[in-house]
Length: 199
Image: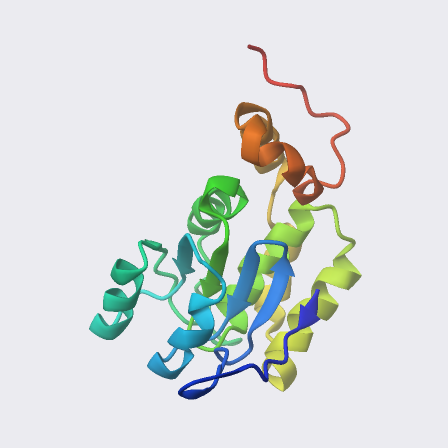
């Protein structure tokens, strides 16, 4: 995982990535909310899908962009939280978003919320657990993007999130779509204990 610095020039100036933009994995990206000034950069990613984690309606200019480029928009309306909030992140919603994320037919895909910190950080953190990252590395990545505004509630959610059923789901997708998916086995770093789907 690395932060991306962009200084490529085009006729209209510099290509500007959205705030907090980074590559998660090959074909998976994360960021804050894309502004119209970021559209030129997003075109270079050749996105198939966007996972949008806010409950608010997508702005019309962003809808025009995704429609013009045949990008699928998957919206999972997770309310913004504070560390003092008693309402937890909905596990079911995160599970559904992860199912979209791990389906290689949706790649390249961009995950974003408002600032690319908390909701996006939780989804990426759960994805890292699916990849069998150790929790200390998952938390370090989350805090790197959240900065001083990292939330203990988010870390508790990531730690308690159950990924085993999704590991089986990913394994099934890989074996069902051999053409594009066969070179995506790296999404799952450990396959022990998971049964190969029967034909």
